[in-house]
Length: 218
Image (cartoon, rainbow, N blue to C red; front, side, top):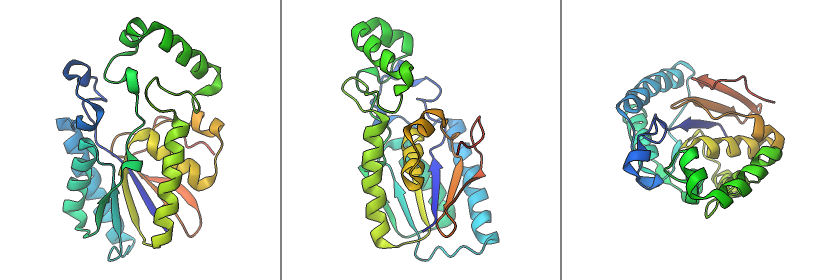
């Protein structure tokens, strides 16, 4: 099973505009730049699939049911024309709880005790285990993406396109290769609209479009 992991286009959460709007995370929209990124990534992906003779007749697109991922998937599929498109809440972004939709400085001021407790855990190499107050830790996200991977493995469909979020995609890679929490702590998020391919035949992990600010950690 080949997995094409696609992060959503730039959103108002990425640009911090949502700190002003204070929308819940599932309603955060793409920016104009994000929409443009989606079209550019889609053009590349369609060309890549054609050039590599990838048969998409039995392909499936799985999407996080957040607005920014739904819109990203919609644009991508306007180029790919895949019939089987599904959503799964296991693919949503890490839930930030009390720390949603505010700057770090604002959270530190409003929730001093909760922030200090969380930050102490985080700074002591506990990034993977540190749970946001009323939210999730990356470990919580990894547990639900493990369930998701188990589910799609039973269908034996390929290729599988997954349109999701930074932390969520990292946990998918982590679970696929049985990487350690230390690997997760070092691995940066993908850039918006980057595409990461996990080749199921040879278990290879590589970027085919975009990337991130650091080299892949192994």
